[in-house]
Length: 321
Ligand SMILES: C[S@@+](CC[C@H](N)C(=O)[O-])C[C@H]1O[C@@H](n2cnc3c(N)ncnc32)[C@H](O)[C@@H]1O
Image (tube, rainbow, N blue to C red):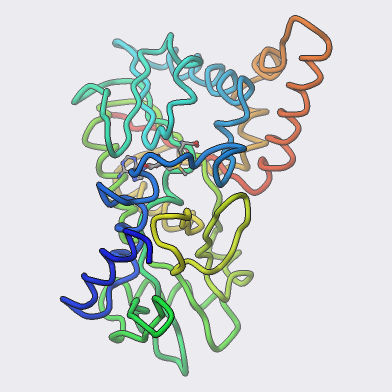
């Protein structure tokens, strides 16, 4: 068993089957053996997956072009904080914007600032609970121990706000048996942004679904990534593979509205790039000294806009302060 697996097994032995959010939190973020915290290579060719932040310098330059606009909106000193900054691939491009990286292990952003909060693939990496509808009843799905490793076990019936959440989401899924994820950390993350950003833009790029699109996801959206292979085996090898859940955009937009953030917009990443980075921003993103390099960068832009740009979306708000 993996070291994170050993830890999870002892938690189960002590307290019984875990909520999936507890399993995911330990598997990804345990201080000693979590997938993101144990120092393994997770991003890029030698790692397990690519994000837009590996599409450099193109993605960095595009976000810098948008940040120029955010800076114009700022009356005081502009700061740009990136939450969930990963290995810091944006830093060199956002240097001129008082850039600060925030992640589990670092927080360079001022306690309070004006400017902008940016995130890329942060929300899909937050721990979620899992729930299943069977014969009209929604139950929490917990993680227990079986002969060969970790197994799903049916837990208690959902109640309260998460039952309401599941019933609303479930109304978009036709199949009698349905799985969904409960985004139990999402509001806490928005509250973190809100407590630090006094006034300015918030932009979160990620993949996910609006509630109408839930009909495509009757089996839920939990995915594991290892060596560029995706699988649904999220309970396998904790600590040695990434675990993600698609972001529920309808819920995200509603939770942000409750924060009092305004000018909410949800666009595909491709559309966001075209509208927010402008023609000159896009041209600059593929600027290079040689034609061969320009061709290479244009291919990256194409992947961003047409490969990732249609599944990824940019959620954007303004906090008036
Ligand atoms: C999928 S990675 C994305 C990294 C980077 N933004 C990119 O696109 O390559 C998710 C990142 O979110 C970070 N993260 C997860 N929970 C966080 C939290 N509560 N606060 C700050 N960062 C967090 C993880 O440590 C990880 O670096």
